[in-house]
Image (cartoon, rainbow, N blue to C red):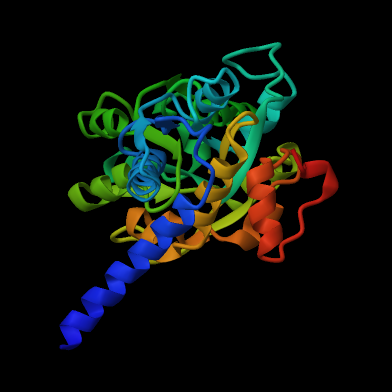
Length: 325
């Protein structure tokens, strides 16, 4: 009898979610949606595909994740209307809004709107222990993959190296490919940025003797003074197998974004589903522990979509007037 009651409760909960979405005016909704993610092996790939599946199941729309070069490309794909939702880091988003995107220089991405906060993206490095590499300063003259061209790590690691005076030999590859290159000795280190735990780093930590690190105190001081788009971040000990101590690094916040022309009712339902189903989001990726309404204040420049504004104001959150899109 108890099992029967639990089953009924589960079905009722599912029907409740669908009923709320069904009440929305769907006359201007698309038949399908594409979510721009990033390369395989990173958190965006897992989070974005999981998000697409969740939205597809609950909203009754064909939704899929698409592999991309990461945030820089995702912003442009949303701006041009090629993708419905993009996962973006706020550093590249700010640059794109100013017309300083590396992918589309001169194009001010003013049609992009924020939906909801995702999580922080910490910058992290992995190298084989036998290389003796254990700090960013050790990367001078070394072969270092910084993820896909156009992604957050591919954009910012070269800037960080320049700031720190580290003359690394930079190359680009997807997270899974870069991890394989490291194991095969084709590169000396893999410098990345993704929600933690990052799949490629977890696999390396489980399969090989590696060093995983962020920045020394001196490196941090220099970076934080030169790069206001990042903040100090402490990666908790135990995030990766064999690394029990906290790791100091820097991080940027991530948001899901959409085009301003997305139907307001659809943007509302998407935001509501994600914000009110935290356990479901946590099943997608552990980084979703930070996918919470209170983190809307981590966006201080990108206007929110009117559908998102409606949802957050309904639950008592305040959106500044200059961020209502």
